[in-house]
Image (cartoon, rainbow, N blue to C red):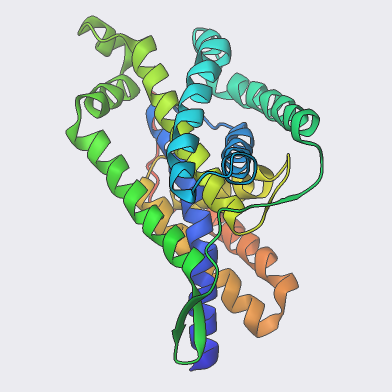
Length: 292
C-alpha cells in the first residue's frame, strides 16, 4: 500500500509539473498554430521574478504570482510586436517561427546568464512539509501545483468559451481572412493571445522552479516534455494535454519504482514513439485536410 501511495503521489507531483508546462503551449497552438520554443525564456522569467521578489525585495510569497503574471504579460506583448507580427505576415509562418523562437530562447538564456549569473539559485517560492497519509507524505508544494493546474485550466476554458476576447481569438484562429471581413482586428487579437500566453507561461515558471532551482536554462527540460505531451495528446486540445500529462507522469514514476530511475524518462519516450506510429495526430488530435 505504501509503495502504491508513493507512486501515486510522485506521479501526481510530476504530472502536475508536466501539466502546468503544457497549458500555455496548448493555448498558443490552438490560437495561432504556433510552436513556441522560446517557452524556455518565459519559464526562466517566472522563476527569476519569484526569486527577485522574495529574496531581493523580501516581499511575501502572496505577491509572486501577480508579479509573474504582469511580467509575462509585458514579455508576451514585446515578443509579439518585435518578432511574431513580422513573421506572421510572411509565408511558412509555422516553420519560420520555430527557427526564430529557438534564437529568442538562446538570447533569453544569455540575457539571464549575464544579468543573474550562471549559478543555480534556490527558489524561495516553496511550501515545506506535507500532508501525511497512511505513512506517506504528500508535499504541500504538489498540492498547490495541482490546484493551480485546475485553476488555470478553468480560467482558460472560461476565457475561451465565455469572454468576448476568447470568441475573437477563436474566430481569428479558425479563419483569419473571414475575421478581417467581419471587422476584427487580427493583429490585436494575436497580441492579446500572446499576452495571455506570456502571463500563464511566467506563472508556470514560478511553479516549475518551485520544485527545483532557478538558472538560465531552467525552462529547457519543461518545454521539451510539454511539447512531447501535447504532441501525444493532440496539438491544441487543452483537456487532453492535461490528462496526458498526468498519465505520462504516473507512467514515468511507476517505471522508476519498478525498474529504476534511469528507465523512467526513456519509457515515456518509447510510449510516445509507439503512439505516434499508430496515431500520427496524437490520441485526440484531428487530421487536417488542405483542399486546393
